[in-house]
Image (cartoon, rainbow, N blue to C red; front, side, top):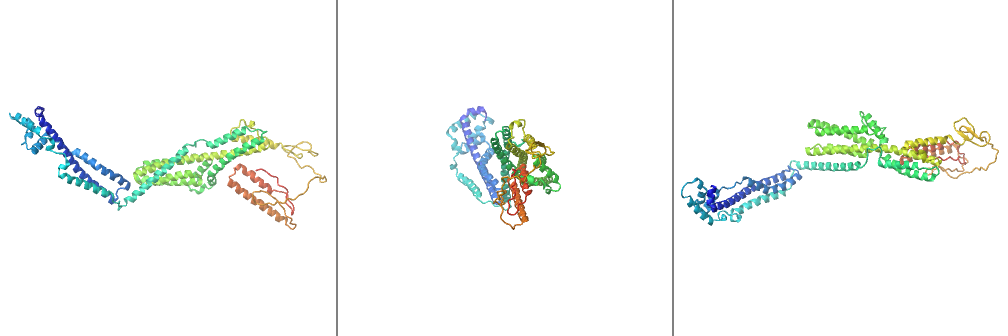
Length: 581
């Protein structure tokens, strides 16, 4: 129908267009309905297959099933839109002519363009008159209740939907073992995520510390305070000096004990490194020695090599090569984790390496899980390197703390002689500077002492009396002459104490035993001294006393063994001069 003809019969064209829209909607509904039945049947088959065979893991099945149900109506409508075509005017005219019994009047109107004759105006006039009397709903209704077949169609659709819903309630069977495998994989994936989270938390904690610095911030602050206090020492303020030194010793001693406990295994196991792998003995020992000196370069180099292997493993596509590389890397990680824990004494570093090993072992599986596990292993290796820096810094801390404690001990000795003066240490900046300065002062003090006579020695002595006691002499001094005939106020007394084991290092007592054997008393004395020395050694070990104090403590008990005067039965041994360790 041309535009000219359409303008000659507007009522007819309007009627046909409105009827055409109803025809399109009817076709769309029918097409969508058929698509819905097909998709509902497919969804029912899908649900039954999933529940009865267990081919999909439970989490995946639970994710897919509701989405399939929600997708059925949407896909049905989209399918109807895709497959439904719009009707032409000819289709609408035939529908109107068939329903209204107009003897093909409207069909003739749509074909006037191809028809010649003088009757065209008459046809148009009749069609316009008829169009005014016909309504679109009379030709084709859109009310579903008006169609007796609509009830059956709706029932079929609801039945399929109900069956699909009931299928969802069926328990999931596992005839092929797929569900068990899926559960294990989910468990492994969850473990990987948890270990990765733990790695991130520890890395965050370590990142807040400056492990690259020579010593930790806490030790640095303690040493700075000690240096400040040493510079403020005054010869005339002996009590004040002692108080400050005690406070510094308490803080630094606590840090020393904590750090020493952390590195105890490293020091103990350094000599036994040869037990750890025959061909890698020298390499392992070299790494441990470097760590003890606060130099982690050797072990860091080994960790870098392992991290490089892990990087190559993630890019390898050949299954055979991938398996070989994984096995070698697992062995390296296992060896390194054992050395970190048993030899180096770093439980944190051992945990990081064991975590990397565990993640590497769990990478043998699906591609998605393999990638996730290998990424987690990379982060664990990074954490192990951070733990190594922390361990090396602790070793450097221990060395500086030990020097600080030795410096405090020398400062206390000088303070006891009223020779500690901070002004003399104006140029000192390190513990080594202070130790050198204090050694020089103590050497000068040791060369000037009181002598009892003349001798050819290195020091100067002062004495009273004849035979060299009346003036200054050269030498360490000799024994002054004595006159036993001179009467003195000395009285021989006996103590009522006895040597016992306990907190009192030396309490002495004699018993009136005229028949006691001198050799028995000597043996008993030596046994008691030996027991005390053993108890002292154990106390040193348990309290982790700094090495600078060990020699002084042991020398004190050596003097007890070198006593020249042996106690006689019924008499008190000569008093032992007390020495401060």
